[in-house]
Length: 292
Image 1 (cartoon, rainbow, N blue to C red):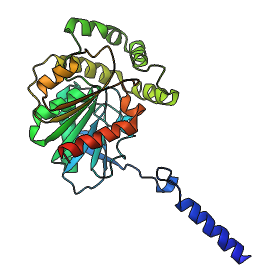
Image 2 (image 1 turned 90 degrees about the horizontal axis):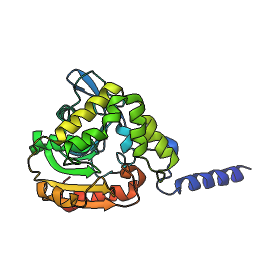
Image 3 (image 1 turned 180 degrees about the vertical axis):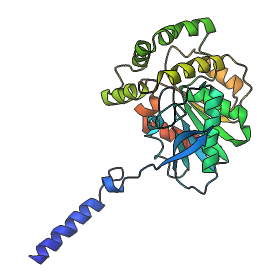
Image 4 (image 1 turned 90 degrees about the vertical axis):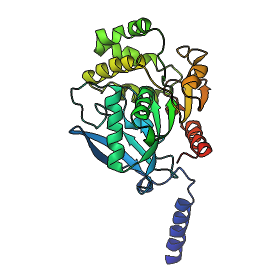
């Protein structure tokens, strides 16, 4: 009897130990620890993953009305790098003061997190609104910027200002009905139902005073004067009529070291739809340019 029990026990242990990578038991699955930084008296929630002694990191900056979990397929995917991912002010688990949510405000919040974490230099990835935020960060702190990753975001205005502002009229006129329609417009039927539900539900939890201010000030920032970008840039864009055919050339005119990619068959949330391909592009970009 004891022999049978021992044999069964050994078989169970062997089977569990032999599970393929990526199917770890729940109790052994890596987790991101929640941390806090102070910014102008407000709490900023963030994750700090990897080698805490490293003074360099990959910093992930999310989209308008999103949160840190929009990077959930990225922040644990780079064991060779230190990774910082945060809820911007007004979003997720961070405080939501009634202030002007400008791109500079967000960029300085990013810096507050980096200072708290002791990160001296970073590759910053910005999804959508995250793109003007990391561009602003580069302008404010060029010495801390090793490289930039543009994820379906605008380094330049979408088009003539009057046309762009007209597009957002429904959102500002009636936020409660305009925003759901706006979000639905970014989620084609190709997006899986569970991902669609997560994106829509999460974005709608962001308070109106945050969403309205951030969108208006993002548009203002788009038409401001910006300087050249002299660090390595990776741009991964979704194939979309919103992006003009000449966009690659326009990006390279202001950021000559840009590696520009356009992906077909994905939505605005391409890093969530094709995380493996996206993460591999990040690894190649960092390694090729020796950034971290």
